[in-house]
Length: 91
Figure 1 (spheres, rainbow, N blue to C red):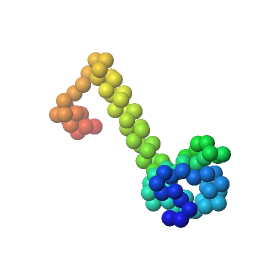
Figure 2: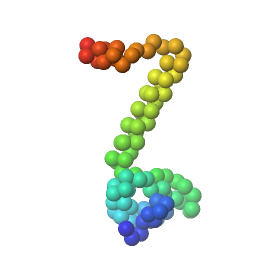
Figure 3: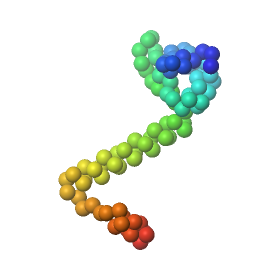
Figure 4: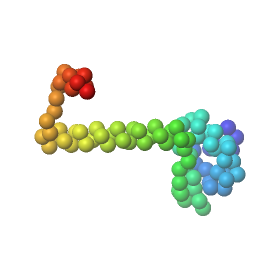
């Protein structure tokens, strides 16, 4: 893709302004973020909505796993796989 740095995914804010469609298409195609700079300094991140939503889902899941693990470490009651299946069946 011409005009997009494929190896690092860093673009200036003026490139974003002047080549928005190309950068947006690149982000959608690769599902990778594009880092935006202003005067050579990092300023923001551009990513597709799909990539953002997927990232948010992963972060929420990691937070839930961390919370469950902390609760287990501090003595919260746990259940076996069979007990968990039975609880899910009951609903």
